[in-house]
Amino acid sequence: MKKYVVLILVCMFALPLLAQNKFVGANTCACHNLPKVGKQMDIWKKSKHAEAFESLKSPKAAEIAKAKNIAGSPSEAKECLQCHSTGFGSAHDASFKVEMGVQCEACHGAASAYKPIHNKPENKDKAVAAGLVVNGGEKMCVACHTPKMHPMKAFDFKKMFDEIKHPMPKG
Ligand code: HEC
Ligand code: HEC
Ligand code: HEC
Image (cartoon, rainbow, N blue to C red; front, side):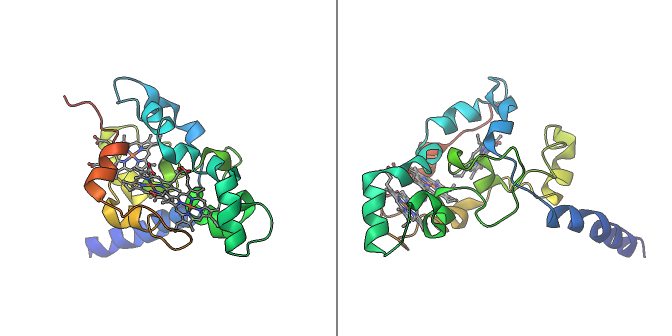
């Protein structure tokens, strides 16, 4: 009986929270620049993911779009933004900046519901229930790292993850 009550409570509170989850943008993740948590912001800013939107303005991008008969700028085309931006087609908060490319939430989930609580280790389960993805694994990467729109490097998870890893300091 108790189990059902818990289930009903979860449905009543967690599901509507998930339904209204919004992408808030990496510019709001500044705490992750502290050395004691591992400076994930700095690491990400130096990664190609941070440039993913800017790349859509390059001559090479224009060439790719032209070959696919995409009218207008690639930086406004859904065919490109699906992979070169974060949470394309979903709800975004006013704080969100598309220019920041493939941001934290592309891999860790839209953060509006979990952001206020996820900084306390004891809240981890609650944060996950509110949409935090701790480790989405290879299948998440391959959703974008697939030559659907243009050719690209073969995806080697171990090697590619090594290039973008941003662990918390141990201890
Ligand atoms: C939302 C789509 C998306 C997801 C999810 C994603 N990536 Fe990417 N990734 C990109 C795009 C787009 C680029 C190219 C950015 C650029 O150069 O403009 C890229 C570039 C990279 C690069 C640099 C490649 C190079 O040419 O030097 C690495 C490494 C990488 N991603 C690793 C990963 C790993 C590992 C994962 C999963 C943990 C992942 N990516 C998930 C879209 C994504
Ligand atoms: C299915 C996901 C996906 C789609 C859709 C997509 N891209 Fe990409 N794009 C990537 C990934 C991943 C990379 C990194 C390539 C690699 O690892 O070799 C990339 C790389 C690029 C690069 C090279 C960036 C650099 O560092 O020079 C350009 C330019 C580019 N894409 C333009 C476009 C354009 C224009 C469109 C729309 C017509 C588009 N892409 C659609 C995933 C995608
Ligand atoms: C391309 C996908 C991707 C992006 C972008 C990304 N992460 Fe991650 N992140 C991961 C994956 C996958 C893991 C899990 C690694 C593991 O458990 O080995 C992870 C782990 C973490 C961890 C936990 C590390 C640990 O040691 O427990 C933190 C904190 C984190 N990310 C924060 C961020 C922040 C903040 C940003 C943006 C500035 C960001 N991530 C951007 C994929 C990503």
